[in-house]
Length: 297
Image 1 (cartoon, rainbow, N blue to C red):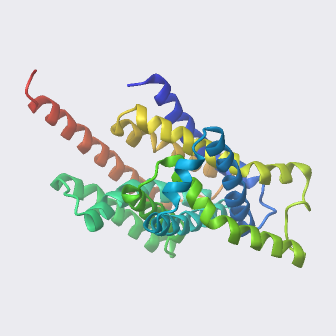
Image 2 (image 1 turned 180 degrees about the vertical axis):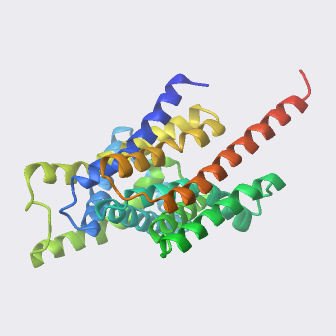
């Protein structure tokens, strides 16, 4: 296993974990405008990366396929919705609930694989999925409202990941095409907002304007780091590292932003955390059995 790949993976998930600090600094900007700036500046940055790597010709040829464009248009829609819900959750002081969405996501992704890709689950894998559903139901009954931010994040990112399984492009070219599809509508809305007098960019402090401009770089760097890590370290290690981000978000929500975390919410979260531990433990034991039964060479 590559130590460099491991560091890339840790770095990517730590950046995602501390994203709430970044978006909290933009709390004066409407969530929709933050997301549209995220799309716009991400696209411009990614195009520069593609050009710098001298991959424009191959990117253009791949992106010209109608089937490819359709797949990435759907992926771009899911990604934009995920970003919008996430940013709204952060700037509306619901960081703890956003973390719940990314705790649920791995188990939901397994369920989506069964439904859409006909993947087979081992019998013991059904237990953590059922426990996660019980945890969400418990939170809904105890808190009195469906944790819609968490569920929206889990479903949009889960479906986004499902599409990426059948998508033909690599990480850099895929994200470039996704932001390219969204770029023109995003830019037109931002220009319209400016013309109508409710655009944020240019009417904030210099620091807030700079943060809006850099949001594309901040978005793209962890994705590129993750892509490098995924090629260099085993999938089970990626599975472990993915819990860094929601853990950081949860700790920020409770201890930095002082969001309410009642005993009822603690019980619901604990059920879901227990489900994740069971899911990881079952996978670990299954790998051990597989290695032990493999013939010696």
